Length: 544
Image (cartoon, rainbow, N blue to C red):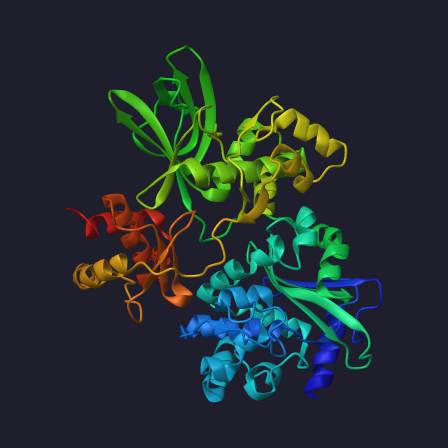
């Protein structure tokens, strides 16, 4: 009866009871609680390698001790994607590489009863395909709609950890052939398996999320790499437009108009002088050279007086910052060239901007990157989200309007390349020979920082006394590990109880450690996502 009810419900939603036909790609996604589909989406499908993603989520949420997996001298079955004989892989790398032995429940110490209780609670039901740990594996068949519902039920910490671990699939894994069409917008676990009715038929695809958190599943005939390569354009076309930035992205503080002294700032339409503080509405900035500029602010810009001059600063998310650079420096309607410029702008910021008090700090200047004072346009935001998490490795990227030298992106030349049919990867390869697209945070492995951990052990008891009266404060379940940050913005990996930081050599570095610890300590409360609150509190904790 349950299977019949599922089939009837699937039919009402437009899901086919049979598997996708040859040559077609079946795509399904959840828009809120509504299932959306393209092509002949099956009512049920084998999990293939997706079972590893569910084990990863459980381990991340429960903060299980997951020792690195060591490959045998003689390769065992299932190790072909893991590592070289004698080498090891972390659980993050194992997920991106689809290393099955690393996810063996017995190796991770997962109890079958605890597993069932965990997923039943998160799902609000007891789907047998998921909750029966002893039977969970590549042959397990599951309703596609329930696969998507399970992805939507991941805790924010587990989803964030999985999305970060899966980004290398698009830069160095089976998804790299699809990167020109999909960029860094998909964070998916690939699978290739045979169909029960036709064991000689290879059927592959992937499931996971887009960068905006949208749960996605797709599959077609062939291995996963072939499916991603052959159907990337269809995926880019049928999935809804990207509009929402990731919730956990770094912040960027911008000092606006640093090359042009400001005489005054007026609120419009009244024309009266604007008051210091947060700016919300339409404003006119008057420069001492006689020029004026009208802009809008939604509360992310602020006015203050410094050295008897008005100063405007902005506190933006990384996506908003890069999109405003695209709006200021280029034309987002030139899609391929604008995608390339967004990746260059992100790469430049993460490599060159100074990092202080939990944020990147940069000038609005031609010597750095010029930034629009207005909110980013939807087109600029879309081309920026296309390359979310991607940077250029092996290059010191820059851009100019017309210069066509190696190591410099010429905007006009890139725009013409795009109009001639070149895609973002070809545009970047010509401008930056020898470089490669890489992930902004690497693979997520942890190189411990003992000096930071010792400092934390001394500081945390004092912090807890000061934080005891704060609403939403909940100490982490143990002392977090401090991991070396190779590049990018410090961040808290709440799922695995890790802080990725640079050190404690300066006051700003110590504030950054406190800042990320607070994200962990307020992880279950909205205040934990309030960057202003977290930064103010971090400075109080580390006040001299």
